Length: 471
Image 1 (tube, helix red, strand yellow):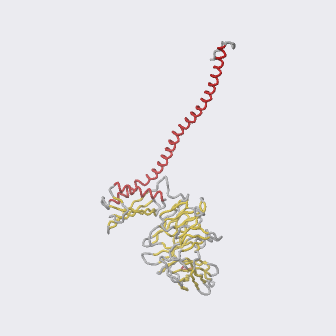
Image 2: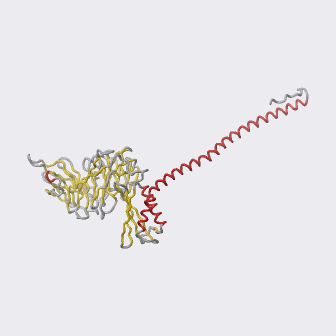
Image 3: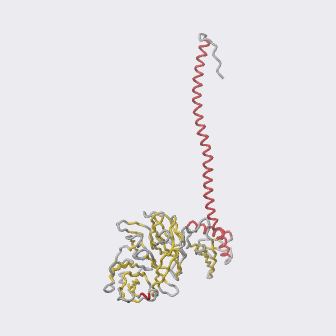
């Protein structure tokens, strides 16, 4: 509707007063309108903020609920098996009793999955009346071992009650949503025993430059054996190569030590060129020659030991002279060094995610590290012996690792692929009748030499381990 017209004349005094009043009113009205426009903007912003305040927490809660649901789904994979194992454990003991529960992971399961299993089992045992404690004075000691075979997981619980010992074991199918391996095909480890002796053996190396033989005579194979007190040269002819007992000792040179051996001594044979070789020992180094006779010259030394062969030539690590591990320093050919935590052994792997270091730590866990020494992941259940190999299978690079354990137990070695910064078991384990004390790569990095102490016979055995594509 249009405004009513002003009917007063301009000459009327009332009109002058009214005009003044009208002008004041118009000014006030304009100011009010300007003031009203500002609060409307504020109201719009306040309204938008109100909806954001309502919707964002809801979206966040939904995301958190989704994450929680995924975590619960992963944990649910182990609830039923944990209940089954708890039932079998409690069939050997009668609550209420105090107990300690420890767990070892020798399988390809990651740390998160192993933790979920541990929590699920402890929860089941508590609900059924067992009193769990960390005290060494507990009446019951339960040690759970997570292992696996080609068909699935195997969980074994050893129950110690005073002088009695019982065992509870279950098999667990692999979860469909998270298979433990993402490799395209299974691998197999070929294990060949190549030598054995009664005294402790530190290393074994086959010499590629075999002795020339007269025409028509089989060529002799040669090998060096590093023991605590000597380096010995062995030979056997072509006919006896398939027989591990066919080696004949030809010569021996003493290892002269200027200091006492540390506990669990270690050593490394490195084959050089033109009938030369070297020996790395804790706090010492020896240089040797094969022709015209076996000769060895040893002296005290803190020189680093060659770390890996074939895949990363030139890398060397410093060995702690009075211990059985490397002190954490790695030196490269260009002179630069990395300072890492102490480790027993190392591997160097190349995968789709890039090149990485693998170090067998002193705590039965391996560390996966980037080339700049940044920590990428930790792997539980591995022992002190690991080695990286270059093969024609799958990614082209695998890792052999033994299981965590002690020197009084039988051992096993598995092949692993490193996928998405995780170690995926790629083979069935190969068993040893005693601990694997050493695992060194051969010169070209295609195979490894494993040294094992046979607990049944008391002998020390050398095996050649290689990886075959497919089972």
